[in-house]
Image 1 (cartoon, rainbow, N blue to C red):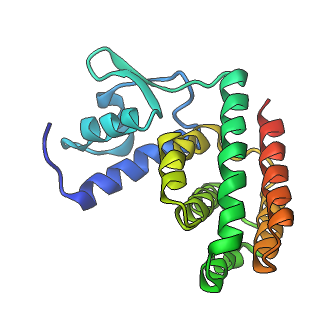
Image 2 (image 1 turned 30 degrees about the horizontal axis):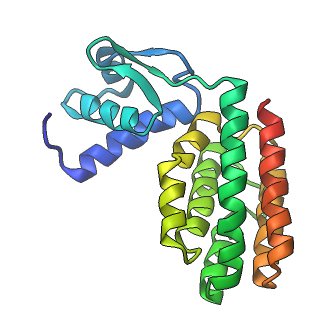
Image 3 (image 1 turned 90 degrees about the vertical axis):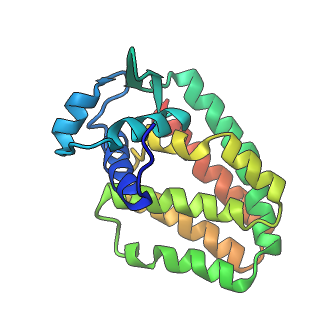
Length: 205
C-alpha cells in the first residue's frame, strides 16, 4: 500500500468518516473507490488507504476487492455495546472523579463552554462528545482500563450510532457529570454517567 503524508491521510480520513457519521454513507451501503473519489473530488491514492483504516476500526466491513459496506448494527449489537460502555465508563468516571487533577476537570468543563447556549452543529458536537468520553478514560489513572476502552472500539461504535437525542439534553447531562466531578462526588458522578448512557441506549432501541 502506498505510504501517504500524515496531513493528506488525515484530511481524506476526516472527510470519509464525516460521511459515515452523518449517515450520508448509510449502514449497509456499498462503497466503491470510484464513487467515493467522485463524491469527495479526490483523485489520488488516499482513498484505499483510508478505507482500510476504517475497516480496521470496524466502521466498514468486507474487503477492498469484493467491496466494503458501512457496518450495520442490530438492536442486540447496540444494547450489548451499551452494556460494555456502562461497565467500563462507570469505572473510568469513578476513577477520574477520584484521581484527576482540578485542571483536568477544568479542561472537561472548558470543552463544553462553546456549547452553553445550545449546540448548533450536530457533527461538531458529536466529535466533542467522543473526545469528552475518551478524555475521561485516558486520564482516569488506570492505563489498563484505558486500553480496554480502546480495545472495545467504543469510539467507532459512537460514530456508527451517532447522536439522535436533542443536543441540549445531551449537553446538560455532560454538565451534570462535570459538576459531580468538580465536587469529587463519586456516587453522583457514577449515577450521572449511568443515566447518560441508559438514556442514549433507549434512544437507539
